[in-house]
Length: 393
Image (cartoon, rainbow, N blue to C red):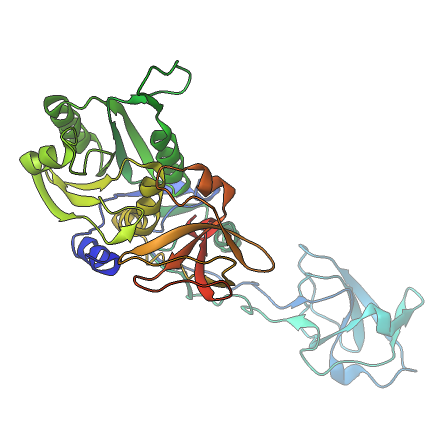
């Protein structure tokens, strides 16, 4: 099954699993809007000056030799008085334009003796004035439900006077690490053992996406134990994610356990690394089975699990648009779509020497994945699609 077919299969089985909660805007970064944000006010709420200068009624200006009395001084945050006919008001950037004025002349075009001002020229009516509602009009929908909130969005919401926002509760994702060979960092390795890198890589990845991780630790390669852990995970999480145990080895029990507690809807995807990926349900809870090799786990998390999880969170489409780079390498193709670990530079993309799915260092050495289409060789100088890791954030 191709990647496109796999993602389409997951898309047909996805639904919003996260509930709604109300959160203060200072705690909303990265959260998913549960409802549209509609402005109850105009921004700015009144006409204001775009610069320091003098406000006047433009028809009162009779030339550079004709001075106007300065009738008031207006600073930002202080309401002005109506402008007296035939006078000007000293005004500062952001200050509200007084009723009766229709133009602001920048101070560089003026001279004053403290009580009157002479202007060398003026702008047309509306000049140097930011009109009421120029940024946002009352009643405008500024952000849609499903939007993932960024720092600039929080500033926008604050500018509307909104202190609390309805967002989706954090999606709870259970992580189950399987494998007798796994050992936690800090313990001495015995022959045949390796450190559990996937647990920390996936936990931090999920948390960076705004999800709540329910960590079930390392599970022994025992079908009964795996079954108990999976049943517990189905009760306390919205989605279950496992690493390892979904291939065809005698000690790969996860697939069989999932089939006994639910079903497997998809198994094996034509990508490299990441072929032994599985999707299904465990006691009604969506199940994502990632391969055990660390690079395979990372790639499938990025290109398959990520869009599915965001959809379950209630987010809109989280499309990743590749960049174009010159390939500084040659690479023979296979029948599967490959994700090559590369490092981008001013001259193009350089490929890491070993593309083995067990070489996790390649993902830290590199800063992107180059996409190699099935049965399409890459030659030095070709233009290739490259996805920087930061685009998956």
